[in-house]
Amino acid sequence: MLGLITMAFIVTGSVVYILELATMDSRIDDSLKRSVHEFRVLAARSSDPTVFPDPVTADALLYTAMQHTLPAKHEGMLSLVNEKVRWTAPDVVDLRLEDDPGFVAWATQNTSHTEVIVQSVTTPLTTYRVVSVPVTLDKQAGPAHLIFAYDYLAEKRALNQGFTMYLLVGLVVLVIAAITGWLLVGRFLRPIGLLRDTARQISESDLTQRIEVVGRDDLAELTATVNAMLDRLENAMTSQRQLLDDVGHELRTPVTIIQGHLELMDPLDAQDVGQSRDIALAELHRMSFLINDLVTLAKSNRIDFVQPVATNVGVLLDDLLDKARPLGDRTWKIGHRDEATAFLDPQRITQAMLQLCSNAVKFSDPGSNIVLGTRIDETSPGRNTLRFWVRDEGIGIEPKDQAKIFERFGRGHNSKRTEGSGLGLNIVAAIAAAHQGTVSVSSEQGIGSTFIIEVPLTLDGEDH
Image (cartoon, rainbow, N blue to C red; front, side, top):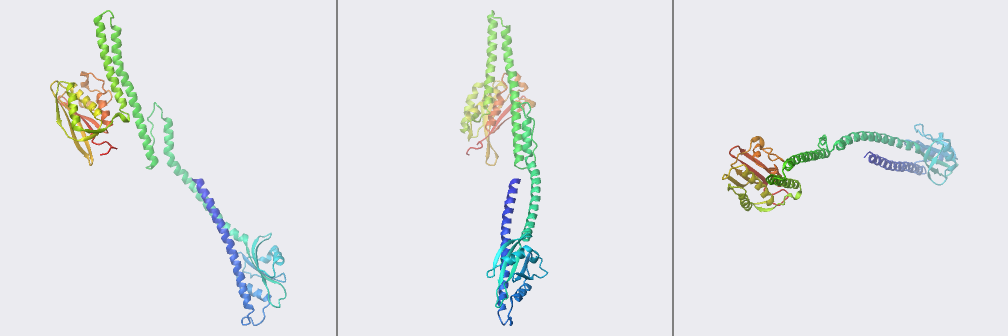
């Protein structure tokens, strides 16, 4: 940017200087022509007997013309008679042409007796812009000339002084712009520098570094976005490590059980072999469920995990009830039904609801009530929420366990009485999240629990 400003400054200054120089040349020539015109007017009046009764000599005409002419700054005049200096400018005129021998020599040798000459003359002292006017009168004793001249270099020096000031001011402006730009750009790019340094410090084992958010501009938003990305990366890495630890722990137990029974098994004892076989198959069956649940959770991060379609909620609820009845000897009911068409994945919702129904069966007694239902509520103007719920009359969940049961391998104290991978409710939470929704529970020990899946009636990005 500083280079562009400097280039613009140079180009602008050069163009203006050339234009001003051309204007100065035109102004000097116009002033010389005006002086010639004024002299010709005076010479014309000299032949008028009503103005000058007596004949006017060239010498007297030159004298009168020089007395009635006031040269401009850096302008001088001189009159020649018989190729010799006859009259000089009044004392108030600064430019003394007679003091320049080179100019006097040019004037006496190069002037024309018949034509007005306008040209530039260079002497050892300076350069002049000159006009020479021949004077021709009747009964004239000899050649006579009136000469006006501008000190061209003096005029140019005055112009150069103005542009020298322009250069100085421009230099000061460039220095100020450079300092200001350095400070501002340094401040603006500070988040990028912090981003670079933080990126260098981040490693697989350390994702805790964050970038300081400075200001409220686009870079600040970029910094906040990168910090959010680092948060997600850290959470993903933490979750991955936790998953590996949990999976290792969960798989280690059945492997240890199988290995222990096989090592202690008496191969000659058919009963012992049969018991070890049954235990190994049971543990392998449990491992198979665990692997399937892990595969489901891994798929939950994919975009195509859910495939929403327009679904009749009432029909879906009836299908859920029919599929839940074989899960256990319970009294299955529909508590409340709202008829509507929702945009959701019926297979995934069915998977989540059957998981909740399976849990309700595990933690309730035979013959107790399990109630399913749906309800549509307007949570905000133009946005409706669809709620699925499963209510049981089981043993309930301790308050301290209600938050962690939806975590991966999260189990409450009551889960010790049943078998399971500890991933079922986590899968339910993943299905709800994939539908831009949530899952929650309200429970009282000894009375029962109600699990609620809340999803928007219409997903974001879909037509209402």
